[in-house]
Length: 127
Length: 316
Ligand SMILES: Nc1ncnc2c1ncn2[C@@H]1O[C@H](COP(=O)(O)OP(=O)(O)OP(=O)(O)O)[C@@H](O)[C@H]1O
Ligand SMILES: [Mg+2]
Image (cartoon, rainbow over all chains, first blue to last red; front, side, top):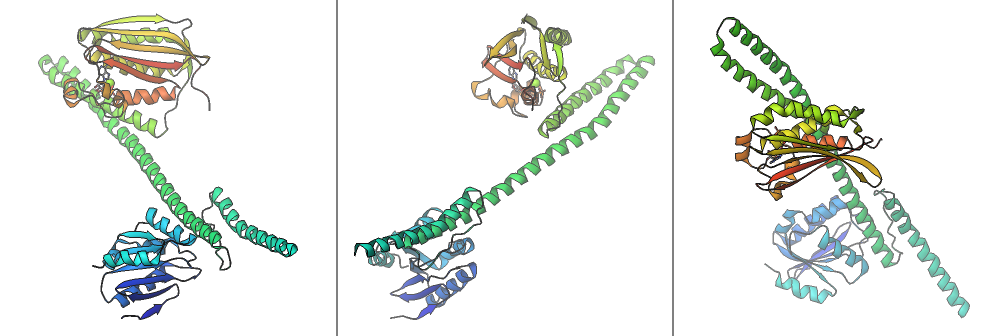
């Protein structure tokens, strides 16, 4: 069981059963620098593997445009095989809708109301 | 108990109003096209309020970004278009000067040849002159179009007698009409022949349309008519040129008004021209406050109608 966790300024990140878990913290300004730091943390934990990711934005206070664009840049597809977003909250729905319609990621994206459903789908996305 | 509930309710209401105020201010800024305003997101806000604030902030950022991109693209396009028109206007002027010299010298050489009794050689000089004049006309057209597009054409309005203008046109065109084996008819039925317009521009428009009619008709009839027309209480004159020539395919009826557009390449080779005439004519009609439309039937003929306001283009 791999349960090393990295906590950055804006996210808590760990890998469990081959799935990257990202929980966005309620940091007021989530910037491009934060996006760089978070991506590096994921890389470090994944050790070069391309993994599916569960993203929980429920406590997010928003992130700026550069950060959003960085997370969905084409090269992100080399690290993330699929993304499940939790939308069982209003903030979650806001982000889910945004990433579905405005800044589409370069990997498969699905929105889930329950974490267990999300995990079932993500397990199928392991490459 | 009831009092406590009421107080709690009042507190809740006040809190919600305070939170809504922040959203309201952000929306107000967006409504005034200030997309840089951001709504504050607080830990102790209701989740719905925070979700709306986050959504508004993302919307503001995206709108701001899109607006800047659009304004930038528009400015670039405008600058490019102005630069193109200015370049065309300049280059056309530069080309015209030496060309006029060529035409002038050809004329002198021609006279010298005649004086020297070398009449047989004048044919070549005539060819030189015809080609040069053709080139000069073309440059003049390009210059006109560039000037119109750069907004550098001034319209000089005068009270003119349309009947006289049409008469003069017929005289000007008579030789080339005869050469093409066509017959030019005129039907002028005007209550009052006075029109406030720019006679030079009107002449240019009608010369092109009549020229086209004659170019695309062989051994047929060309009818130039003029009559009054009233629309929404405003007085217009309709000037139509109808021919019995080759006609225009239905799908080309609009594109022939675009610059450098002709019905087909084989026709270009057969009939010459560059496809600028109608583009210029339509823009000039616009400047005169009028319009130009066409109807046609393939192999039967075409009718072009120029409609001009009797009192000139609307001011301002
Ligand atoms: N009366 C007409 N009958 C048939 N085709 C016409 C007639 N008038 C215009 N057209 C078509 O529309 C095209 C565009 O006309 P336009 O006057 O713009 O250019 P042009 O006569 O070819 O060249 P230019 O006027 O620049 O010397 C013509 O090439 C021709 O194909
Ligand atoms: Mg023409």
